[in-house]
Image: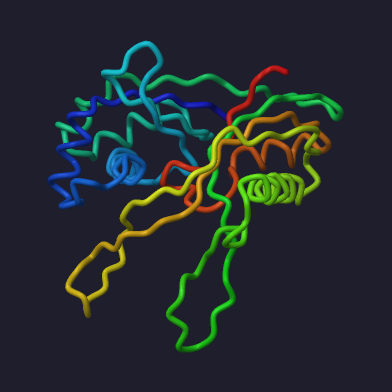
Length: 233
């Protein structure tokens, strides 16, 4: 598995937004989602997006993939030339192939702590909701978020959570494509929870561990959430 860094010129993302008729206030994650699909023909999820460190003139996109840069560049030949020209660089770093049970690894992830809601015929309420119940205090919400990510990451027994902290938690308001013909609008405004997690995990099963990292965690993984970054402890 390779950690891939794609650097894009913001002006090409803005042109893509205009040409695909996305709302001016559409969040960056959604536009990058569209750019990855246009460039590679397959959406790499999850991915992380932000400004390139020490150079805020470029958008940095990070994602894991088993494909080589040569294969990715081959796929780019079918994209619009002006979008391909906006790719400043495409480089990869091979992830370690040997993980040892008991090994400690530090992680960071911006995730969307939501849970599915059981709906019955005729229900018009949301399909998902914040894992923290309405009206809880900030301390209580942080507790719910820690419990949520610990359970999600440890569910396959590929790793154990040794420590986790929530650096930031706040709702994100953006737009999503709905294709609702009855309203005449393709987009509706949605709000969902977002939180930055950082902690330390212990590798239990190396094969399951790398599968967890590649899959990411939480909802909205195709829109810039859930990408797990690894660091030395």
